[in-house]
Image 1 (cartoon, one colour):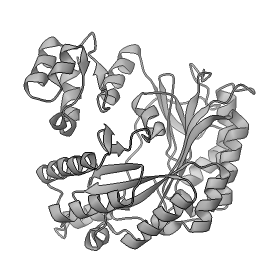
Image 2: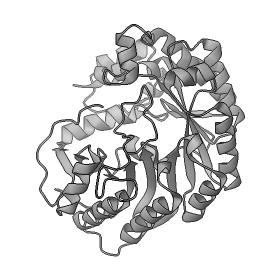
Image 3: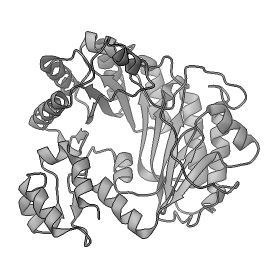
Length: 399
């Protein structure tokens, strides 16, 4: 599991320099529990379902309610207009908790902040962790969208990734979600050791055949502390090849756009009007509060992150203290640079920053990394090649 970043101490009450969220904000809820830990996973997840009071599947909602109450105090919210524009339950596997528990957390958020009419309310889920009835209960509770971890439609690739579901379970889960009126997103992973170009096309075409509103495709990253990382170190698996991954990305983009899915962020494609509004809040550097162990937040230029272990998280809240481990207060220059780093990933790109070196911009155009015609009109928009080298584009723009 990746370490938390370093930062300055957070006041015990969690107070912020600028807590104003009167224009609205988003909520991320991290559910840290999983049935098994996939070999490639480096997220803050745990297969132990009971770490003690407030840190078990049954008691965890109480800890979340304490953090929601703390955030209501920190943000100085007192019965104002509905503030939450998006809510996203991630993990882990949120559907390790039953629908009544998830619905209860959603009700607490609604009672504390109000949920705006038409808000997008998403939960992630593994295909094997849902039933027709559980999805019906989630839809009835107010969830509008579900994101399934499909990863692949090829059995040997799923085996290498140590996923538990079968391709047929994905098909059934998507069908049930559609019956309940939920918008559907599916996640794919490319670059798995042993995955061929034909395997990857099979997975992309299978995802399209499900008819989801949204498809995400992420390059496999092998992290040192994972089971897959250990297998690579022992020579049992080979590291993903960056050139092959670039080819897979181009392959996916071509197939998805040919099927009517439009890219709107480097790793995300959607049917028009079905872009994930919660993720766009991140890319637009808007305000959100992340609830749960290891969750990160951003409120008006202050970034803070919670302790990672569920029991440490629960104990802090039980003592009436913030569970935040540390924070970073960005100055104006850092905020401008972060807006570039995030915004450049989007389909509409960014206005050329006033501080950008004109020679650097010219070099990006000459290298085919940004659209030349848009750049002449004052906007930097990544080309397909630029999307593959987005980090290099960001570095070139930085002072």
